[in-house]
Structure formats: C-alpha cells, structure tokens
Image 1 (cartoon, helix red, strand yellow):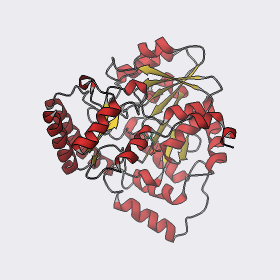
Image 2: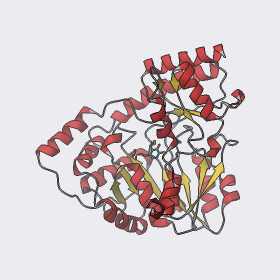
Image 3: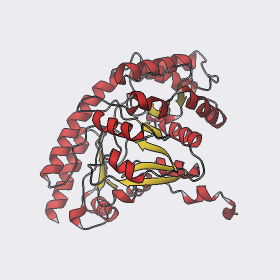
Image 4: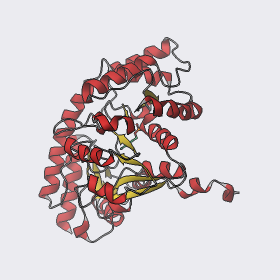
Length: 384
Ligand SMILES: Cc1ncc(COP(=O)(O)O)c(C=O)c1O
C-alpha cells in the first residue's frame, strides 16, 4: 500500500549528510569530520540542574510556549548579546530543537505554491520542510558572491509568489556570516515588500570576527522577521532538543497553535537544563568559541597550504573548500578519501546541487583528530 503514502512525504529524501555518515561507518579506521555535533560535554551545572529537576518531579507538561523563566532568560540572553527585543510573554516559543522551530515557522507562513528564497549551498534541513508545507524552494547560487545571499541576488529572484527569504547565517556549510551593511541592503530591498525573513541564528554564539549581527534588529525588519535559535550548538546540547523561536506577537500567536497541536511543549527537564545554560552557564559558549577559533585558524591554514581554494569562515564550525580542480564529483572525491586516506568529509552536493564541486569539513572535533585527519589528507594528495 506504499502508493497511498502522501506524495510530498514520498518525494523528500533522507539528508545526504546522514546517508554519507552511515555509509562511512562501514569502513574501519576512518576519521570522520562529517557531523555538526560539538565535541564538548554539556556543562556540568546544566546536567546537575536537569538531575535535580527530575528529583523534584518537575515532570509535567509546561506552558505550551515553554516555562516562563526560560522564555525570560532567552529574551534577556538575546537582548544582551545581540540587541534583539522580544517580549517573553508573547514573542518567545521554546521548541524541540531549531529543527522544529523551522518547521513551525514554515507551516505558519507558507501557502500552497508560495516561494521561499534561500542561498545555495545550504543546510539541507529547510528544503524538505518547505516542500512539506506545499511551497517551493528557490535556491539562489551564491558560489560567486562568497556564499553570501546579497540584496541583488534576492532581487533577481523575487516574484509575486515570494513569501519568505531564509537567511541562515552564520552558515552551515560555509561558515560565512553577513555584515551589518549587507543586512541593511537586504532590509532596504524588502522595505516596501510583504515578505517574511526566517533568520536561522543557531550558530550566533560562534562568530569569530566581530560580533553576531541579526536582521531582526533593523527597525523596519523586526515585524517581518522570525528568528530561530537554540542551545544545541552554543552549549553543546544537541541531544537535549531545545530550540527557540522569536517573532512579533502577531506571528507567534499563530506559530504557537502549530506547536501546541504538534508537541504540546518541549521536554520539561530539557527546558530546565536550557534555563541553566542561558543563565548560570551562559558564558560556557565563550570558552567553546575560543577553542573553535583556534581550530578554524589551524584547519584553514593547513587547507590553504595544501592548495585548496577555501573561504575563511567567520562563524559556525565548518569549512567548505572547493575540489573542482580534482575533476571528480564531490561524492566520488569524498568516497575516495574514505577508502584511500581514511578521512571522511561530506560531499558538497548534500547541501543542494549548488554545493557540487565542494566538500564540507566540520572542525567540531579535537585538535588531535583534526591534525591526524589533515595529515592523512595531505599524504593522500601528495601521493596522487
Ligand atoms: C543551520 C542549522 N539550522 C538548524 C539546525 C538544527 O538544530 P537543532 O539540532 O537545534 O534542531 C542545524 C543543525 O545542524 C543547523 O546546522
């Protein structure tokens, strides 16, 4: 009876990152730099808060939007760090990871046939959710603009069906961020247009050069922007599944309905852990960032020394070098690295067809692992 499965669901695919990761696990002695999973432990105080919450039986449903103290802490965190202003009572929703936040946002604002502009190459989590909402992803080639979705590029792709633009910066897979001026140019373009922006800022705590800038802080954009964030990457809490949605009340009140009927609320214990992360443990992310920055510099310099063409990332924990000069598809290149060098990188085509000709390297791994993997890569290139 498989023909009775919903067509939209049948037509979406399992993420290429996972597929490649699972395939790589069959090979022995492979150093994998494939997953965007911080290698730090969740801070101790966060774990303690969660254990205490269990012992104190804080195990019931919470408010659908999340416990108020957490919404207050989240609102305070983004106000202090990024100058974003959101009312914790009406403009903040605690979700199950950034992933669910994106899903709720898409289902709330998109109609059948709506178009969503997004850069390519891009994190593969958006396209399936856009399609499940009945809408159409419009990937814009950013390979000639240093992976930046510029106002000009957006302008070339806007139609009367455009409902939303996704700004996923700092970017997975490229590590690129947008400057305040670039965001202002986009704001100027959108000034007289009724188009939403979904700003995925899950890597906002990991910005190395300068500080994180959000389009939501530009006055004309606040009312059109939905901000996605969370503690997965900032506090090494991917398995706790806590994301955050910030949006003006007129959008949030509708997103809350989708969230309520979908999951009721995020896990009460994880919410208490996230509260600890955003209050007492709020500076833990700064320590992790310092370590990531060292790794970024190290990996970048080594790749450049090996002759790779690569954009120096200013955020997140990825590099996206070009492999075009090897005249192989990104899949074949990555597979030969696994088989012949014992190193796994993600083929760029996992990040839309516009990622073909690149590979993604995650440096959310220890210095020892990175050093050994880069030695293997260098040896492999010298041999061939
Ligand atoms: C750009 C981007 N957005 C969202 C997510 C999902 O985050 P979460 O684990 O909080 O659902 C990821 C995870 O890798 C990501 O890279």
